[in-house]
Length: 462
Image (spheres, rainbow, N blue to C red):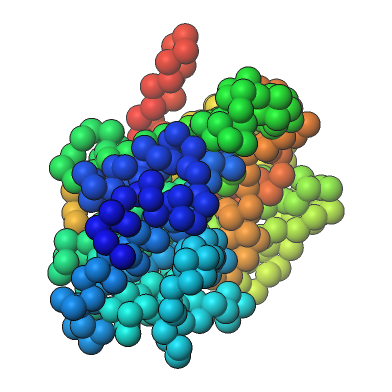
């Protein structure tokens, strides 16, 4: 083995890997940029890219084996995904490369068991090591200095996986990182992508739509298979999954909602007022959310009523008769209802002795925008791990249906799911979010004014 063997073209030729033109560009950038962010559509070869990325590093470790120590400065790399199955894809590619090259894997020390999550490669007496890890188990993301890390499906990872666990381990040996993912809205992966686009030091980004894979789609954007997919998918879904565009209107409506951050034990606080927000139904459920707001405008959903096939009088009575909800209804002050059912609201207000708040209508996108503001972690000027960085919207564990709908509320994915070509979510799993949106519109939105195509939004706080 010699230095010539480290040429990318030479190594890739030995394992039979023929990267398409964008993959080649990403591999070539490894020598110039420490942190690379790849925003990729489906079927672009993200996993193939990441797995082959580590093969030249195995050769490099062999050439430097006299300077390396299995217990000291070894070349160690991690492949981290949301689940083991995500990390396994890159790991499988690398394992196949090493077997093809007949590299002598250390035994014991090398394991390929994706079912148990035990995926580990060791070469040259432990001087070169690769571990596949799941971000689902943060306790495993602790170790000594890394020479590099691949973050697979990075858009699905929590920001702390990078800032708290991976980034510090790269400091010892000035290690590199490769982030690859299909986008999922403008979340933390989008922020990393922007670092490269803004040419921040050490950062480089590239967007790789599906049709850039000229091996799989030889006719590019106009490839017949791409056109068939486009005809079937909702426009925003196609733009994200195939076009690798950052759009908010695909998949989960509340992408920032995280049970670990937003759900906990939040009992009734007698020092704070109680409000009730409602959404009406019969075949669909009647919903009442019991909400408290503190002096900092933190919002706590402390209890819920969620039942189908109840008339409005039955709805009102069951709440009052409930051992936990009844006392809350009796101390509540204001009802934030669906404005399209004033008769139902009048009945509830009379039974529960509440005043009815107006301003709970308007565009659904504006109500969703307000909820998203309170879900976000802030203030943004504080460092990532600061104890005061918190969301402003919380849910008690008892609000089981509300929590489920916050997770399940989605945008259309196929053309057949579309009611129209708007950006509105599906009319499914939306009953508790509708009630919550009514509260935010009535309680916080001072003005939602549409002027032509421009929407001006202001709130008491964000």
